[in-house]
Image (cartoon, rainbow over all chains, first blue to last red; front, side, top):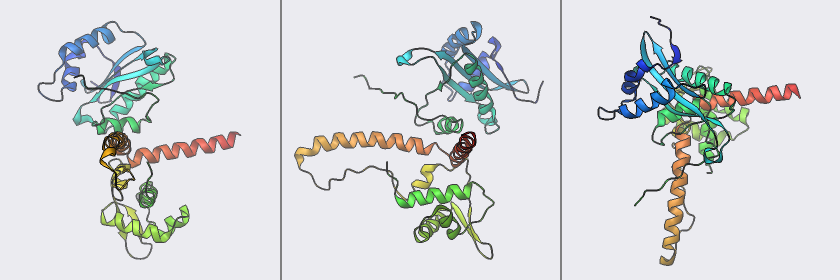
Length: 148
Length: 146
C-alpha cells in the first residue's frame, strides 16, 4: 500500500467512497445519482469521459469528474469538469491540483483546448481553488429564474 | 468597477510586500518603485498596520512587512479596508415617478456588485502574485523572441 498520492481511474469498487466524500451533511447522500454517474463514466468508460480518484494508503481521498461536451450552448468541443472533492482532512497538500492537472492533461489529449466548470458563488473555497488553477470568468454567463 | 485611490495603493503595497514576506520596505521604497505619492501611501500603510495586514518594523533597516497569510488573504479583504464596494446611483434626489426606474437600476447594480465581489473574494494574494509572475515571464519571453 503506497504512501504516495496516486491519481488513477475510478473503479466500480470506489462507489461507496465517492458517495461518502460527496456527503456534506448526513442527509445529503445521492446514491442513485452516483450509481448513474458510475455507469456512464466508469463502467462504460471512454477517453472523453474521465472519472479520476486520488488514493493514499489505500484510501480514496478525492475525486474529479469531467468529459468533453460539444455544441452545448453553441460551444465548440471543450472539456467540462462537473464534480470535484477532496476529503477535508487531506486538503492543502496538493491533492486537488494533482487531480486537476491530470484531468486537464487527459482532456487535452482528446483534442480540446479549453476546460470549463461552474461553482456556486457561495463556494468560496472551491472558487479560490479554481482561480489558483488559472481559471477566469468565461464568455458564457449562467442565467436563471425562479419558476412561479 | 472603479477602485478608489486608497484601495489601489493598498493593493500595490500589499502585493509588493506579500511577494516576499521576509522583506521589509519603507513607504519611500514602495512609493519610489511604483512612482506613487509617498504622502497618500503613508496614510494607506497606517491603515494596513492598524488592520494587522502589515507589520511596522522599527529600528535601523526597519520598514513594513507583510503579516498575513497570502493563501488566505483575498483582494476583497484588502479593498474592503478602504471602501464598501457597493455601487451608488449618483442621483441625490428624485421624484416618486422615478421610483420604479431607480428600483430596477438598483437591482441591476446589486447584481453586478455581487459578481464583482465574488470574483475579488476568491482571488487570493498568492493567486494574484502567481498570475503576475506568469504574465511577466510571458512578456519577457515574447520580447526575447521578437
